[in-house]
Amino acid sequence: MKKEITATPVPEHERPKFMPHLYTARCFILSEQTMFRTARKLSKQYAGGHWEFVRLSNGSGYAYPDSPEKFDIRVSGNGFEGTLGKEAFGIVCTLFALSGSCAYAFMKELQAANETLHDHYHQLLDYVQQHPEAKLIFRAID
Image (cartoon, rainbow, N blue to C red; front, side, top):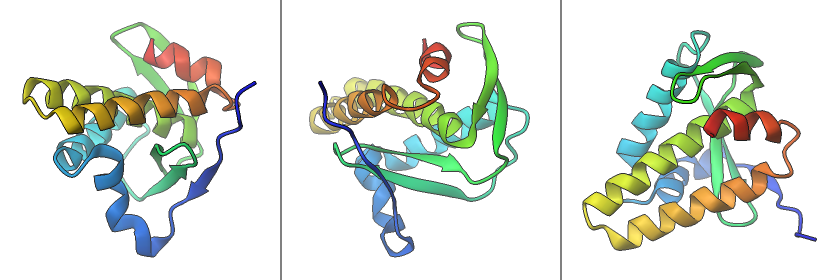
């Protein structure tokens, strides 16, 4: 039995350090842009705005938009269509950004960044297994 992974909101004073931690100092600007672009691509309901940051006890984390409460999404790459809560939507966007950034770091031969991004991706997947919307999240990223 796996130990439960806890999720903790990132306090305001720690927000500037969160994205460079999650996406690495070498890739966080590209990754953050990818996360927002992915949100726009997946849901017509996403119109920008404030995002909340969440640190996971296993070393990873994710971000999610603070509104609306639910997002209707369509993933053209796998045909998934469904409705996700804002946190699950943010997790999906974060996973897509981590995956893309991992590929970028690999192509640029940024070995340490690639390993960290890989670890954060899989640590976030570990957390998803205990999330109430796990089945929908896994279907969306499949």
